[in-house]
Image 1 (spheres, each protein chain N blue to C red):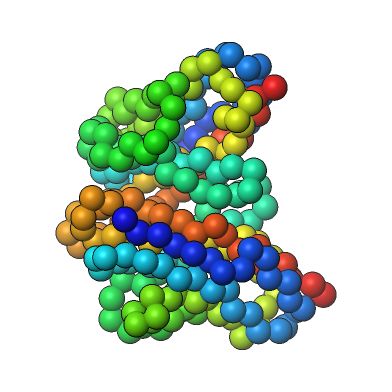
Image 2: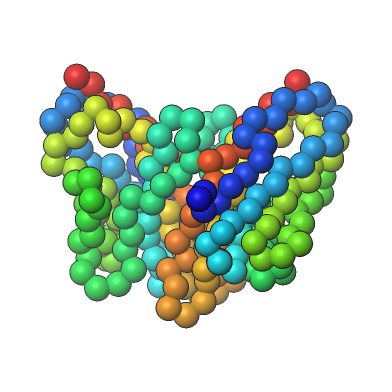
Length: 115
Length: 116
């Protein structure tokens, strides 16, 4: 069983379109994340949800909207896609709180290409 | 807020040579430290972590890292590398409190290339 799974793995779309990436974790963790890895491989956190509540919201355009229907799922919806949105988006999960390390478990990534 | 600096963007070495990938961090509170590895076209995998206790931590595939609090460093080393170690390595830190709680911050990554 894949611990953190993302779909789709590859996504090619035109500028101006709206797209979604889905993420699910079966580790029983209480916290999920979206990271963006740009063409230079730099990893930057975008959002984090803890028990379905938004706890980290970095400076991200409001075209990006995360949604967490339950603590095992965190989806990312992107409106009006731009060329600069092309990147690999990684979902991750962790268990926070006393006694936990906060170690992140990553999905395999979703490569978004905007033409 | 914490930050992580990996001092080398690329490190080329020959097979069986030793290697050190450098990482420095800054934080005003206690931290946990991690090294992740990313093989081409794959996600990130945890290589090793420092939480507390012994400052020298080891992975199952021969890597080790030493936490140095006074120098705020967490350098990664391997005494003899293999071709299969070719990958990108990311140092990361998570603060144990403050406004950045729960946020894992990554360094810029170091590409390790092992040549035959």
